[in-house]
Image (cartoon, rainbow, N blue to C red; front, side):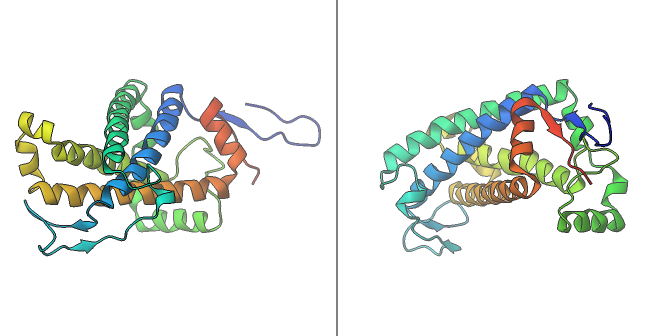
Length: 239
């Protein structure tokens, strides 16, 4: 860490993100961006969602999705075959990237050290205090600047251990090739159309997390946050 020199205090610099986290972050960012874009392209082929084993044009749909504009889909024109190719390739990147990150995070104790939610943190008083700090745009504890705040922990745990695995395993269940190898997987999710609906809900959760994450990065200081995710070094903002 840096120290005081003269009348001015040089902000502390802490080591915040390990190499495994930084590598996975950028691989995951590219994969998620392309998966969301190609997934919207696939959705345009049949923008209706059902529950159960079967669903077609005249069946009752629980959700009627909009037709997404070309500028947000991959490719930028309607082409179901190409959307599926992009989606499948980057689904593999996402899945194996997440597996590697989880193994590395268990070995370097990232999960235990940074994402463990303690019982005292879930008390209403602590939750309210953390919410107030967020509303005041104070996202770190000045006494322990390296630590993740509670909302970070809860959102990362929900994405890492719920939304991403759900998206991956429902995606596997939707693959005709995997149905032959793991026919039981569709049964776990209640049928092909239920798996497709859960896949879409998980994708929406990941997309919303991404939007909120980017907004908080902007509010916290783009340069500092980007530097920490590239070099691992984060400059503690002055209080």
